[in-house]
Length: 106
Image 1: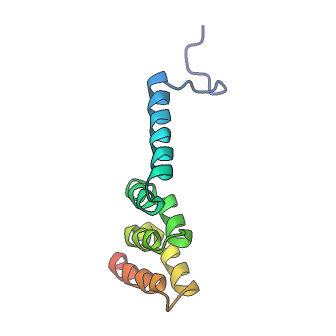
Image 2 (image 1 turned 120 degrees about the horizontal axis):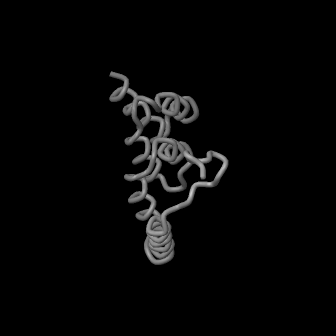
Image 3 (image 1 turned 180 degrees about the vertical axis):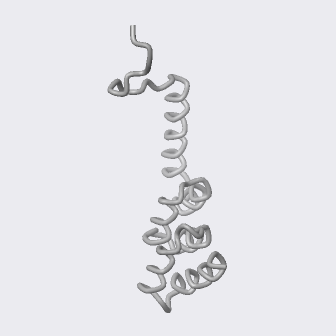
């Protein structure tokens, strides 16, 4: 018998956690197929991590999603805001990034 966890062994997932994740995935697919994908994406954006928010700010398909993501960026994402400003200085995204940079830069 081993006294400790073996780091070479794959971690076992709790069956309840697996069921919860499967239900979330099923609900997401259902929402994407039956609702407006833009609204679904905006809803998901509120609970995503910083990396995915940065990706959305840079590349989201819907303008509303990009603008919302830009508005959610924090101080740790200053380089992303700078990239948007440099890439699209006069677009609505560049202007939103400038505004957000002023807010989080203080």
